Amino acid sequence: MKKGSVCVAESYLRQSPLAQRALDTRVADDTSAAGLVLSERRFLAQINLCGRIDSAAVKAAVGVELPTKPNTVTEGNNIAALWLGPAEWLLVGPSDAEKAIYDALVEGLDGKSAGIVDVTEGRTVIRVAGPMARDVLSMGCPLDLHPRVFGAGRCAQSFIVRSTVILHQVDDAPVYDIYVERSQSDYLFHWFETSGAPYGVAIAEEPATNAWRRPPRRKKDDEA
Amino acid sequence: MLLIECPHCGPREQTEFTCGGEGHIVRPDPDTATDAEWGHYLFMRKNPKGLHFERWFHAHGCRQWFHAARSTVTHEIFAIYGIDEPPPAIDPSKAGSQ
Image (cartoon, rainbow over all chains, first blue to last red; front, side, top):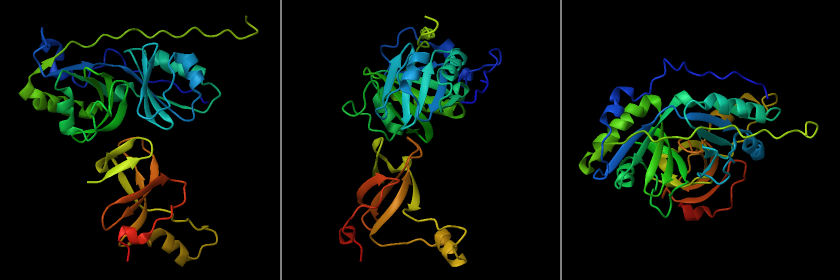
């Protein structure tokens, strides 16, 4: 594989596409009465992986196994691997880990055919939770989100009110992570706020993430 | 609105898909094809009333192509099969063909 260079945005220029909504200043003390609880997960590391990938090599390089079942998510080492297609995945890690994950993949898949692209800056993630989350989502999303079809650990690509999204159900509570392209994120966030208004909308603090650590590299036989 | 069964993702709404038109069109060899054959390959399409074999693309999902056998009269989908598979045997009269 030809090694490329990763382009990482300068941190001082980096701004969330939802920055002007000033979500930090609107965090509710108590979200228990709200039907819809919204928050933004900022700057999550997102690496798009495509090709006929050696799953074991990915596991050794970054510590997560790739899902083979369509529209499912595997998690490991603080990375979530989302199935996007028969030969396409999205690896999602904590913020600021994209360079390290990218480098580990390039090294781990060296000599193999693979497409590894850092798409961190392309999308932001809106976390949608609360007892009415499923109902509000169903107003704008054509997916069948009923628990017998769609539960925790499932993901799907679809759209919500014409915005292309990746939907990942994190918890059966329910809690959803909506990956939306940054140019459409403000529109979608606004739609969530207005559509959830009848049930009460609260802004929650950004969920904490744990740091990604590179798995220890296995020593080669001659080094042992 | 059709509910189309993507071979990978399962049943999804039609709006997630793009129809790629008639399937199983064989590309003639450009070195030996006559102008008439090439023109036929590029522009001539069947427009049947009834059974139609067509290509579909799951544009807002897994971004994979596949084939569907659909009735243009009732919109009923009789079969979904891979992009590299031959068309299945279906009785055209069931699809409203004349």
